[in-house]
Amino acid sequence: MNLFLRQTLERQLIRLHELDALLSASDVVSDMERFRRLTREHAETSLLAEHYRRLTQREADLASAQALRADVSGDAEMAQMAEDEIAAAHIDIAELDQALQLMLIPKDPDDVRPAFLEIRAGTGGDESALFAGDLLRMYTRFADLCGWRCELISESPSELGGYKEVVLRLAGEPDGQGVGVYGRLRFESGGHRVQRVPATETQGRIHTSACTVAVLPEPDEAQAVQINPAELRIDTFRASGAGGQHINKTDSAVRVTHLPTGIVAECQDDRSQHRNKARALQVLAARIQEKERSERAAKDAAMRKGLVGSGDRSDRIRTYNFPQGRLTDHRINLTLYKLGHIMEGELGDVVTALQVARGAELLADLESQNL
Image (cartoon, rainbow, N blue to C red):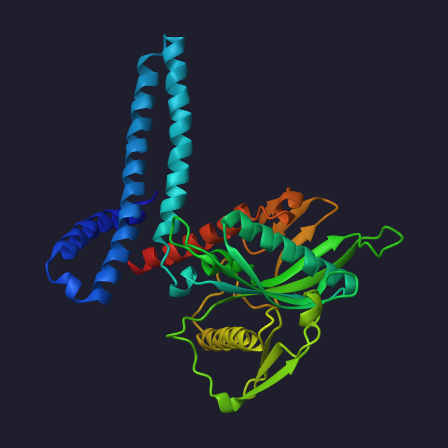
């Protein structure tokens, strides 16, 4: 860990003492909003301080073990004990160092929010739609491993069992670093390319097809973009796909079009037209908010694309090569030869690597600004 990060952590320890004093003041509870804000900051800073104390302790343990190894070079048993402690300390220090770097990443307020996950088939026809279904399964299994809740918002099945388009809502509690669903999945936005022999291929040739994935934070109701009802066109229709007798017999599905931008959102998962409309409006607000965010970023000429890309959905961010059992993320040059496990939802290594890469870039920017 470099000097800048250690200095940052030392300042956090000082801040923790300040927060202790502020929260013990008699007048703090008179302003509940300030009290909640200070309590939240105290919890985050306490966790950071605890990790830093464990890191410094394990560094001291490492130094002691190294000194012991030098002193007992003639005692094979003691030397082995020292070697075991050195190896364990190196592992713990690496894990704590990575965790602290993730905690120090400047927080995006949206990171703790639930997210809408949109998957659309692209080039490749039926094979692309089948791959969209595989991606849906991968993300829902990853959500299960994380303990998140999944809610199907809308779907457009293909004839062979995949999806032309599918939209999910994912919600869950933040992890140990205070990162929620959107913060974990935000770097999944982009083009996902697959290379494999399709089920429809009779001559065993490898085909390449693609899907696009978009991850949008669910807007905070208090901060969501304001939509003028006069600028909306709302259509109802009969839902498609599975759902029992009722879902296909009433016009419960809702499609909402924002006339000024042409952005469309629909929901067909619930029997209630009212609830489908409310959910479709949430998705619409998220898409409008994302459009505004993208336009602001495009106008900022100084904004660098960064290690994890711009989030532009036309970017080819990842390749899934089934014949080689290989996944490659092109933004950070990450290659893993465990594609089967990843497609079963074990996406944690990929997601964490992207967070670490982005965090390293942001921390480097902070360090350069403080030089």
